[in-house]
Length: 77
Length: 269
Image (cartoon, rainbow over all chains, first blue to last red; front, top):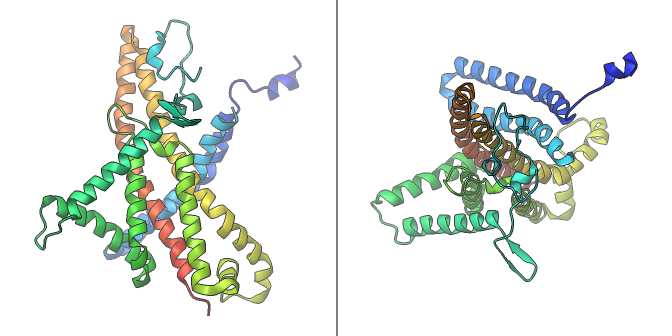
């Protein structure tokens, strides 16, 4: 096997790499959502209920992407 | 792994014995039918969904069949749960106009929650909503409802405008925005609604399975038992996390339904 082929070879389930890539975006997104959410609650503790509701809603929407990335390798395998 | 093997415990395979980890996969979600009526297969998830429906009916029937002015214990719990959806979701998201949809939202919330809760109940221990057909069916109900409401409140032309043309933007943007809104509101919405619930429950069940199977797999040697203990603790931790996720997903499903309905109820200016 030449060096180039060895470098490009991937063993095992390629879906794991796919999941790793799919988790980058939602990871950043969830960080932003909860970071800003906590900041908002700290600035205005009276609005905590409303902020938490919207925070969880945004979290669920973003998290869906990561979960689709998790499920797709199973479906395609 | 074949689909007729349901549990890892059925193979006597342990760590350091040179046999691979029997990882859970799609086969963990396929059940043999319990019985069959004219080509219609009745399997475990359907049984669980059926019992769950009966359970919710029985609970609310027992609580509200003979309502009292001074509520008893059961009625108090049921009223608090009902009020959570009424005040926290319908009134908060839709407003006064949402009162007509409270029955739908309450049913959706408790049905989805019940389907998810089956993951915890001993012996059953399978989240019914991790079979795609159940979330897809629920998403279809939501889709039909908000499409009907859109066209009923706005008429045909107004309904199309409600779905595709958000108001109050500079004209050139509409060239780009209208197709995006059309695709997102009509096709992507029900798809993501179903996939979100399904994928959450699927991922959660797989996680619990991985650690449960790993606990059994690592038993056998002294070192293996230490690993198995850690894996068992992880099973408990993930189960607790799943309790939170189950309630959250039922909540999110209902809130998104309410959001779609509130947009459908908006009248064109």
